[in-house]
Length: 241
Image (tube, rainbow, N blue to C red; front, side, top):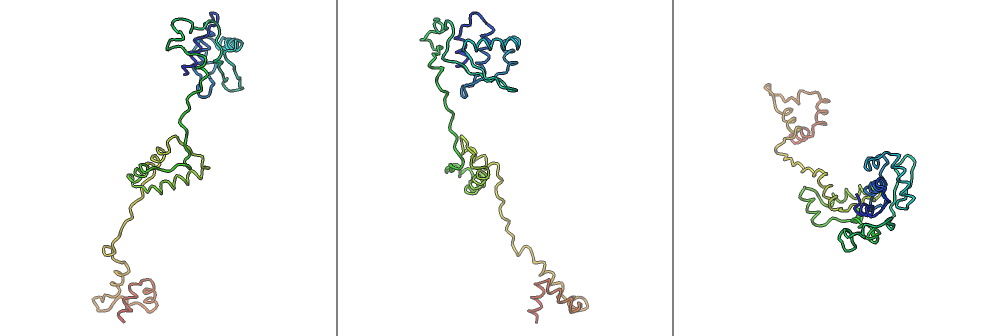
């Protein structure tokens, strides 16, 4: 809703045509200050003005003829409306004491022409670097700030370096929350996990009940094959010799 447009619509005097006034108010209610246009469909205007769609079309043509609105009719799309803020039809309500030039409710044509306040400019990710606070936030979640920034840069480059945000800092923190922190490397102690080859070598070199080592019961070719596949056994045999 545009308060500026609705207030302007109330200023217009349409020779007692209340339905035309309601249609004008409905269009102004859907006016977008940033784009300078309105896109209400006929069905919505008819409900707002409590009249038929044919009546709405007829009243819109009247408003066009007066010069209060201009309509761009687009095939298979909602009509686009522009409002002539510089125009005031009939006796303006601002001449009344209730909306005098000295009243807080008065809105002059100069005010209608003012450009809307610009929104905060967006900053391209490729031109932005995180602050110390941003990096501290990344560390608090277990991330490396440089690694996070590199991931964002690669993602942005893959998408043509067009990503831009009002608050790149918020985007950076959101990225940190989405990323899983790196898993801590597991440290294994060799003493806790005996070498399976070493354990296997002990079996082959430990004499049985008959006093003969299992290794000695193997054929020469099998012994060589066992030594080739068991470095610990091969070392033990070399040391024994």
